[in-house]
Amino acid sequence: MKKIPQLLIFLSLCFVSNLQAQEQIKPFWFVMLIKGPNRNHDSTTAAKIQAGHMNHMQVMADKGILKVAGPFGEEGDWRGIFILECPTKEQAIEWLKKDPAIAAGRLKYEIKIWYTAPQGSFAPSTPKKE
Image 1 (cartoon, one colour):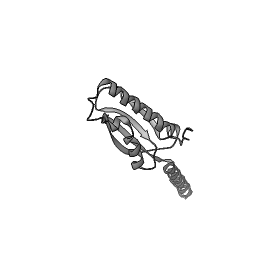
Image 2: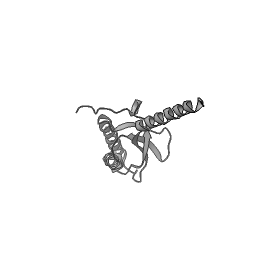
Image 3: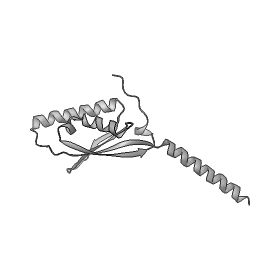
Image 4: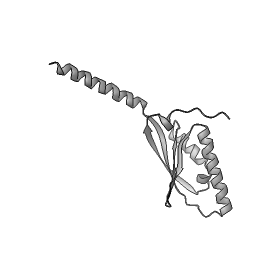
């Protein structure tokens, strides 16, 4: 009979631990950047679009929205990823539409909700002062 109270205590601790873990999980927006339909820009225009794309990423990072960004190291339709911290999908899409590479059609995107604990790179951040 002593094992039943111990089992109940163990199960209770597991339940509480699971609830705490769930409370720590936070939604982010995983964005797959994909080769867009309009990639026939001359090299000067393409360079300007790319510079604008990099600048836009810096703006999002400075505001605490962009958590992770980077290109893939091989050719193909998948060009890179973003992970964004925005309250809603609509807000994340607003930021994506401001990206010059997306606006010009050089890139398009797929966006999915993605969950992780807010630790490390995903810890809440304070936007840089402007």
